[in-house]
Image 1 (cartoon, rainbow over the protein chains, first blue to last red):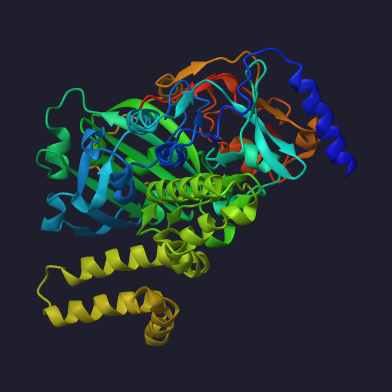
Image 2 (image 1 turned 60 degrees about the horizontal axis):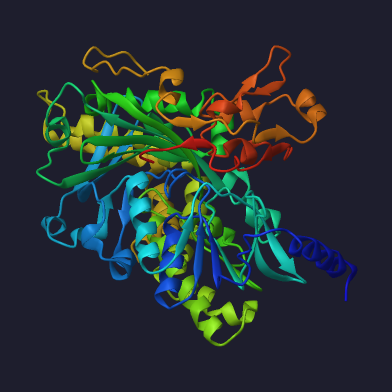
Length: 459
Length: 103
């Protein structure tokens, strides 16, 4: 027996003398964090007759949570009575804009099919409402939820994780399994050496405002061309969105409010000459954005960090007695076109919960018995998508001046030239417009190289 | 950003007013600290100040950052930004700190 284990035995003996309440052995599993990943795990385990304790540090589930604005729901629909979910609007339009300082060049998609249920499983939600509802679904399956309780560390027996320390009096709670769903700021996982602190190149800072239009009826429907509960998802990149940083801006329509924000890498945020708040202000005053947000009042200002390291940054997902899910596991896909995380959070919570229930039935807690969780994730859209786009982020980072500054300017300028009204023949303008774009990418040779570099996008 | 008459005015509320939109329950003491004060005294970049969206990390008179933890939005950017790994970050205790209504 190692000396380290002796010490832990002593600590445990000391704890055993403490007064009630003593929850030890009452729960089969403890989930740290009642966000989407945590509640999905709790719900899944409770549904399989495990006694689950779901611990949330906020005053209610969602109180500490911030996200961009779109929830992707294929798994959540399977797990819950989704009809009762507090949704804002379904996404009926996705729009992608390149912004230079003064110009916008955009592509918009409004497929008719998105108006029909299940609306491509894409809805805007507000996390304060949604996370509370989702945790309630886990409670209805038998989960015990405690709020205003912060997990401060893990309890080990030898190498095995056997419970959590909390900031409550007599705050040690033991259970054979711990699911870490604590989000991207994963102090517990890091403190227990289950993962390393992510580098600032791989983490984005996001600031967001929820805005309302107090003096204007139908402002959202009119400005975003929406009817009833249809909604819009607008994405912006280029120097007009977040300067020369690697990231972008967004606007999502909620029922009575809109969410406006920017997200860009911390590495770039410290290099920029302005605070994230100032970057958000500048984005809101861009000529393409200002008409959408004018006369609005701030209902809420929020900030969050996003783990954007991709597949390479995902830590070991299972340990003896523990599994890591959601943002804590770095399960976010942010490549400019796809901005996903909520679907991965729910899927990882579900797969981890399912695996733990199977391991519990077999009476095992070792990492080997939990291996079907990472395997299931590897075989699911979660890791497949993350791995598919890891190369893209690396290439895009190398090409960022071209992608975020040169090309947005070139496309705007080419568009202006293509549609120029004067007495020259169209042929002259077309040739000039083509030359502008070709020059930006380094001529035909540059265009060929660029096409080769990003060939996987279309192949 | 160039000034164009056709851009409608956008009233950006002050940071103070924006921070006022979120509820903050003071847990009593700071959940933020620095590990070694001398490191901050010699740090010339103050990346914690540059990245903070809530003006919690502020440049002090002597150029050394000070912490006004009461408005922290708990995004944790400071923790990742500090290249000296000198930020102590704890979750505010027993439900304290920021509460987002919408998120």
